[in-house]
Amino acid sequence: MEEQEKVQKEFVDNILTKLDNKDFGLYFFTLDTRGNAAAGIANIYEHVKLLRELGYNANILHEKNDYKLVGDAEGMGIADWLGEEYAELPHVSIETQGIKINAEDFLVVPEIFANVMDQAKKFPCKKIVFSQNYDYLLELLPLGRRWSDYGFNDVITTSQKQADYISSLFPSTRSKVIPVSIPEYFKPSDKPKIPVVTICTREQGVAAKIAKMFYLQYPLYKWITFKELRNLSREQFATELGKSCLSVWVDDSAGFGTFPLEAMQSNTPVIGKMPNMIPEWMEETDEEGNKNIKNNGVWTNTHLNIPELIATYLKVWLEDSVPQDLIEGIESSKNIYTTDNQKAKVEEVYGSLIEARKEELNNTIKVLETKK
Image (cartoon, rainbow, N blue to C red):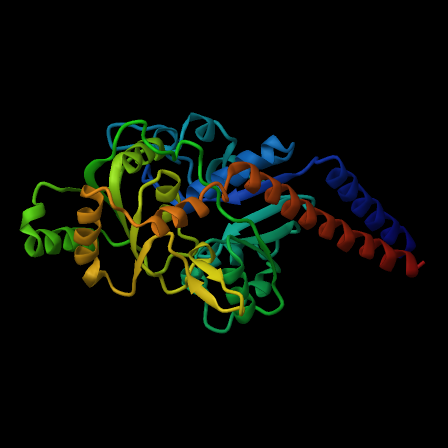
């Protein structure tokens, strides 16, 4: 028995050494969007990119060997909508490369993939949930099951509100927050704004309804163009957003809400329906500690009055009399969610997860030593 404990201690010591030397892998399981832009996927790629800049062996882990990195006749790939530097990040496939996840490694799985968590429950590595949308938490999770049933006891999310909600469902899960960053290419156009209203909605039909309602209710503005921002590269997306005089956002189940922040960074005002979970950047605390909605956009509780709000804004924009409090609100929400700030949080949070893993292993050694 003493010999067995010695072998176990050597095994744990070896893992600790690898953790100290960054000689381990971080594998981020990622859905293949087949070239369709997705903010959540972009954020996973950003984590991998930043971790590699910090000296970690971070990788994109996907299921099939036909992961779409480069565009073809059927559409865009990662290189086309996100950028070459992201397509060049290490991608490993479960299907053909027989990836072996070792005890020193970290496996990071999005909240929606409870089936993947189940498959990974016997893996000896550290397992972490990556939760960006609270609405997906229970999507594929069997009734009565918890993440801890699969060995996932830590979660990374993008806001404190989501972290609090996760804790209400999974009290034993440890939550860490890393906000999303807005790339630097989201910036004001160097030319005057044009009469185009850019729209971003989770459900494509909602965008069409808003445009149709607007033209029916306000035919005098038939010269205004509506442009739905879909199937564009992120840089093209940013360019179109920067040129437009106004943006519209409807996403009831938004977890963080990057689009309004991208618009603000581009000096493009936002008219938006407040989502079910009010984002932290949309609120401010008054002197009495009460939460109030900020004037960094034009916010409403229903998409039905958005055409009216668009018409009202266009009138003041054409008269060059946009309310000063809206302009100041937009300015106050800019340059907060930067890449540098996200990188600092990535270093802090993943560093703390690694230290926690070391503590677990050191406790294992203490237990083995007491058995001598």
